[in-house]
Length: 255
Length: 110
Image 1: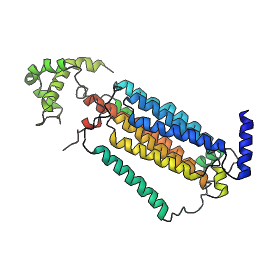
Image 2: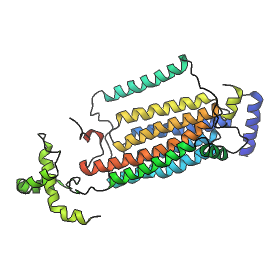
Image 3: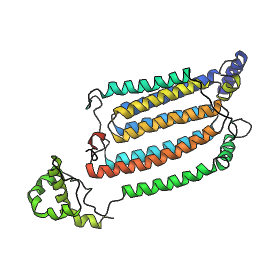
Image 4: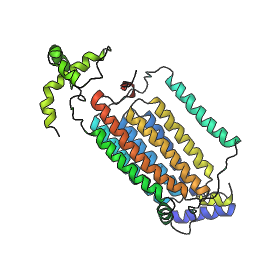
């Protein structure tokens, strides 16, 4: 039934020379999904909801890729973005336990939102104006191949990646290795395991402030603490350091 | 739009895709500027990257050039690397500050 409707609509569209109603319908639905998901990312209070809204937007983008006969990138979009990147987001959200609701209505910096609206409007308007009034040149036709539909999208893309864009592709592998090494270096606990631990409870801070002067002088100079200063955080930082004195043994056996 | 271009773009002229990508980019930029949770700010960066991806694919079809699609491929890889390193930084800061709010990150303030 749908095929018949599609065929009829397609015939009507080609007869009249206008775009197919099916294509327009698909585009409209996908655009609505993309935009509502994007707005959801921005206004959702809970970071988990933001991540799920991001998945919605990514699926909409994938539909738009399919609509432009770009099947391989649509699949990659779903697998890499929705399958890997958003899962990584959700993993970190759950891992850090920051899935508390945030008060969106509060505006800690006065005038930030009007300024943000003005900046974005200015940027987009400037971009549109540039597109209208300036003469863009697109340069010589690429030698990478065209997007004709005689061969499949995957074949075209693969040929192009492994011939014309081979060197950038190899650089990409180096980038991924660097990213992995960087992530491991960042997420690893440093050898001085005590500087990054935050006291769990208020009682832990309060309970240890009494012995602060006794056991802390050596260890603070030892690690050249940058937190020593005149700001009111010093006391808490010192208390934090002191709290670690009691947990050092535990920290060192932790892998 | 010429007839050949509209045919490749699925019968819809490329301007519509570009307009949608522009709106998506604006929403992402706005969210990046107003949100305080670092993770949500990262997601807004992803929105902006996706708007750029949509633009690349649209231009690849409008100009009959597969290079745009290859570029989307690279953008995906860069986005993945960016998220990995960025979330690593968030985890490292969270260990020290127990917070994922950008307002609390003033370690480098003079």
